Length: 142
Ligand SMILES: [Ca+2]
Ligand SMILES: [Ca+2]
Image (cartoon, rainbow, N blue to C red; front, side, top):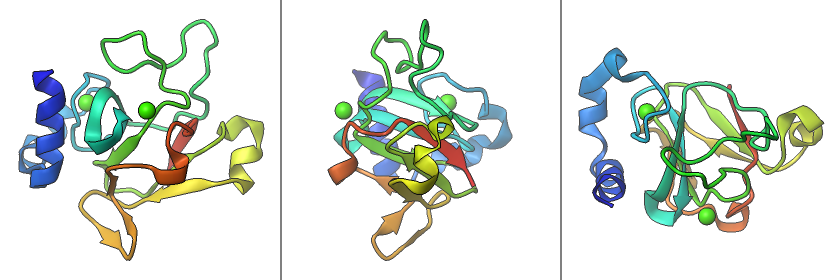
């Protein structure tokens, strides 16, 4: 509970601590948002389970015997993310379908800006996913 609250506050404050950590904090997943990571949160407002990644994950349902879960839990990430934040310097796309089905390439996705950048209604962090709520199934770094 303390960790969850800390993550939300860190994002709201601009995550100055993560910047200072630099490359020493790249190891993922550890349930903490670190510089270089794309993070999916189970609940809106950056709460609930934390799924922190540093690379592309083309299908949240694979492997079937052990699909990705929120760190330290058995709760699966697929179709359950409700907020996201991008701590990397790359754009990230979060898709409503798995990339390797081919559907995502022409399907709906959220465009997540590089860390601490935004343009118009698009940003590096989304406190809720609106129509994408509980629908994200893959992501890739652009
Ligand atoms: Ca991490
Ligand atoms: Ca959710």
